[in-house]
Length: 423
Picture 1 (cartoon, one colour):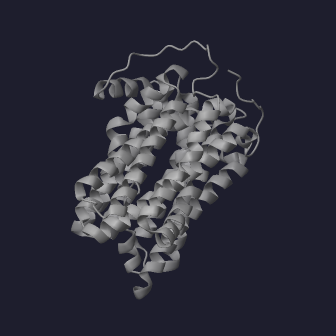
Picture 2 (cartoon, helix red, strand yellow):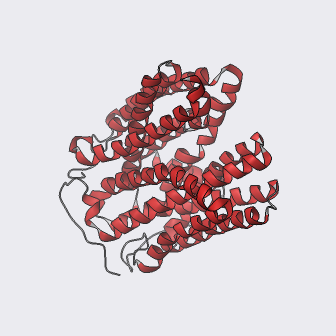
Picture 3 (cartoon, rainbow, N blue to C red):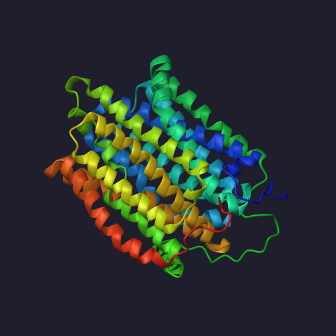
């Protein structure tokens, strides 16, 4: 197999020099858009049909639980098998879920148990795709440009996240829920086409010797892999960093955004709600572009920890402010800082991880980043039902700030920058 074009030397937007990376990033943006279109249409119909908070809660759990219980195993699969095949399996599952929704919406036969199966299928598709999509970046760009690839991939998916609700709302109004879901299934096809036409497997050139541990299922393998990361202060610290942010705050406050919006401008809370979500997404896009354009923002463990501390402080301000303008600015900064520290952490883990266990380590990283977000449903959501979401979010963000101080001390001896010339 011919290896991807390699470029050396520091350069902003360096990953865009690879045509395969450009097409992968575009297909990934459309995948993220389709993922969120499906949420928009299905959540709306389920609310209209059942008005069940319990089903709404299951929708969130089914999205993140597969990362908690299957992220490690899917990372091991990405280590062992052609990542393109995993993409095809994942896209087939996403499309099957979309077409399943379309059938039940068209025939008006949707029941709760149908919804549970389709939501679970969608969640499983996500955890299959995620580790492989991170691992394959090492084939598409030079290792020195992996941080650029991570940032640009994350930024493009924020664009997809931003477009998803708008396109989903349009499809819902223009085509109706059934045909809207059929149209949504088509949006997954660019990733299918990429997987069928590109030569990259995620494992480097064909014939490269690779030593892999035997496949196992269960917590033992995860514990063994996590124990392996302890020897590398950077990898272990970044896994702890994203784990802390996910379990204490995560994105649970976004599910409570209608409650926050209700406190601003009274009868215009729908507009306020939309504006707050848009501010966060636009901030994330700006954060990714700024990191690409400013060389001094190259990844380092202490920078990532500092960014997450600033993010926690911004969430703390958002939790308690009574000013709509301050809330908007806080959400913009929160989006910017979240993308910044997560992309830094992911870049550091991917570069530092040994080739033979990179997929497994990325799997553990995904468990910490995505799977542990279930915990924020308790720290922000359930606790918010008892003491109010403003207090639960504020206390969670404050506790996170306290936890980040010893982590920063632990990381003081980690490398200051990713590598010379990494940006």
